[in-house]
Length: 241
Ligand code: 6PG
Image 1 (cartoon, rainbow, N blue to C red):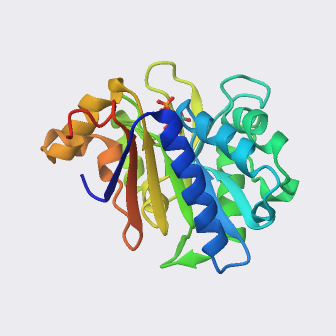
Image 2: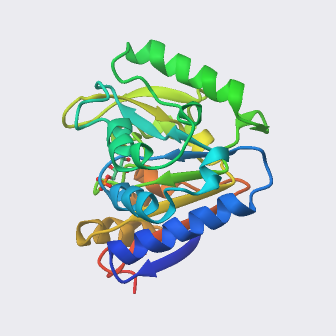
């Protein structure tokens, strides 16, 4: 597996370390803004609640700008909403300016909202070699090896010339907006957070570098200039050790 492997006893210990390392990173960042994109799904929830518990009053939220790696095209009140979950577990519990939260409006027309979100990113983020530059992107990995909302059946989104695109979940056909591969690989840092025994097989396949593993979008994450880290719990890493 490319990048730095960091393995922790369990999801709680992992979340605590990631929270501490994230705040350290923001504290050390020189820019006026720290632009980070977060993924959805269940894995980040422990990180959100750990950040809210330990760093609710941090002044660092003043400079931290949250973007989304992807969003399900549902209203914010829908339990499927990545923004809605982060709002409940984190933003509603910390001192962060509303303008620092750059949501994807899940209730809008997907194509129009994708263009709107891409425009916002291009207006507000610094650029590196023609592409928006995130200071940090937090990714998860599905059991099928997807990351963001780039699924194996549309792995071409890893090479899209758009900043973000409309995608669909292969089983539910749920519409999503997702950052695309070139943006993900342009970040200064990419941190995968992967926990649970059910991810171990896919991680081992990706680690093997087999021909088949290149079919998984998560295996195509390889920051061009940046640093890649995998934060795993022991269960997810059990076939790597
Ligand atoms: C999403 C995520 C997606 C997620 C993986 C892992 O919106 O669902 O961005 O890429 O990271 O599906 O999900 P879990 O953390 O729930 O396993």
